Length: 255
Image 1 (spheres, rainbow, N blue to C red):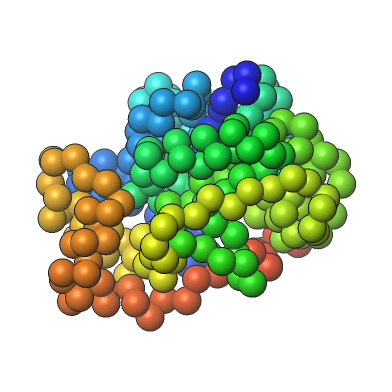
Image 2 (image 1 turned 120 degrees about the vertical axis):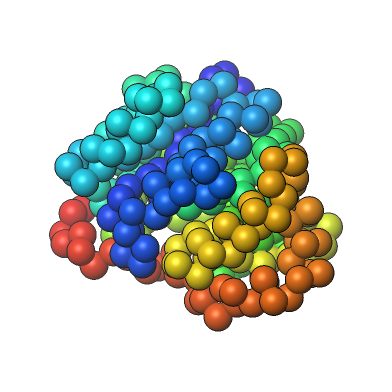
């Protein structure tokens, strides 16, 4: 296994909700929630924030310095390169990928995904894959794990814009290219949306944190709460999730 490094990608210039990663939820910026929850996963040795060299992301570096979070700054749109350079700098043997818009990230789900990766001795494991693949965990608990060797090969070989922007597609899109594992839950909760990409998503997540207050809660507690309060669940029910083939058209020809 070697050194397990979680890399949280974050930037201020979100297309749908600019500045979302610093939006306050229960008294903390969203990015702080993500990093602190990732740090609770026992198998992770270090959590890194990977942001960009764009001046708009200076506040993210400042937040990391203030909170003692390691921070790497790299390419704005070539996120695969950003991940690879961060992984290499911090001498990662195993990389765990998170995004900064998932403040309900669950350490137990992270542990299950890493455990499946290690037990199965695969190149890549995830608890979700985009359509046409299946997912049983809610959007917003996404955990992807790969070896440094697999990430390096993707970094060298991936050429499509969506492969560079979404980091991991090169690892799972072609059957047989890598050994992969999808980690599933026993029941299908894949329709729930617990990520923050729009104002409606943020309103929902704030309502969830307000409900639980300072008590410890996990993702299943959240699902039970939403099932019992459909008026809360409907806040972001109409939001359409972006696909892995969507790219930021502000990127230009970056690869």
